[in-house]
Structure formats: C-alpha cells, structure tokens
Image (cartoon, rainbow, N blue to C red; front, top):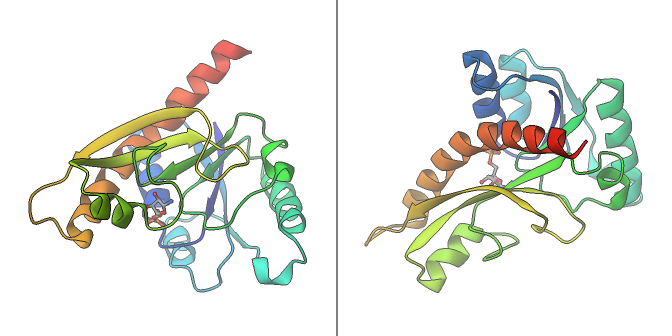
Length: 192
Ligand code: GRF
C-alpha cells in the first residue's frame, strides 16, 4: 500500500502508522505527508521520521476545490494510492473523494455516528456516556460519515477529565488506525 497522509495537527497518528510499518505490522509505505497549517507539529514529526512533506496552505486557495485539486496532484505525483486523513481539520470535497474512490480514510475520536464534528470527546463527556471511543471510516462528503471500518471502545471512568479520556482515546486511535488501513485494503481487494 502506498499511503498519502493528510494532517493538520500534532501528527501522533502519523507516527503510530509509521511505527506499525517499521515493526512490520502494516505492509505499506508513506509516500508523502500533506499538511495545511505551517505551524503544525506534524511537519517536525514527519521530518524526524524521514518522511517527505508538502505544505499546502489552505489560506492561499480561493476555494476548497482548488485546495483539493492540488492535494490530489501532490498525492499522485508522490505515487500514493490510499489517502489517510490523520487529524486533517478541513472539509474535503468530491474533488478529493472521487479521485481515490473508497480509498480515503479518516479517524474520528468518537463512536460514530455519535458525536461527529469538532470536540467529539468533550461532546461525549458532556452527554454523560459510559463508553467513548474512536472510529476509522471511509470518507464521504458529509463530515465524519461514510462506511465504518473499525472502532475501539474506551470506557469512561468516574472522575475522568477531558485530558484523561482524550489520552486513552488517542491510545486506541494509534492501535486501530494501522489495523484499519490493512483491513480496508483487504476488503478493497475483495471488491475488485
Ligand atoms: C485525532 O484525535 C483524530 O481523531 C482527530 O484529530 C486528532 C489528530 O491527532 N481527527 P494527531 O494529530 O494524529 O495527534
């Protein structure tokens, strides 16, 4: 699998995927890391991991479609055939989704379809749920929707703070994202 990773933030999921690859748990390569925020920690992390990065700053584009067009081109030039959104904080358009049919994946820190959108762990805590979790899914146009590939459950403990719960959800993200990529690829093969 040739992965193109899209990230806007800290990049801990990128690193977890890179580690799964170096351990031999995921048979893949990261061809390129595309990021949109010049200050994102993911740039430094990717450099440390020896991964090529491309900054495409959304502020320099007139529309979401224009940004996505450049993303698609960048991913193609680097030979990516799977698109892994790992904390990508922009809405994507059909320009990206249609360029890689059923091969754009996202991770979201809730048990979808509960709590889509921003601040999902906070939303879950505020709702008083007893189990939180995370979801890897295929990306469709509506935010945080699309067929679910894998989920992990994280029980909420009495006295949990946002920081504590978030940390446990992230641990599970790091565990399931590499596994979900492998599973999606396997299921994709079945479809061919
Ligand atoms: C993760 O919690 C993911 O679920 C959400 O953004 C966060 C990215 O974290 N979509 P990181 O940048 O991979 O550390």
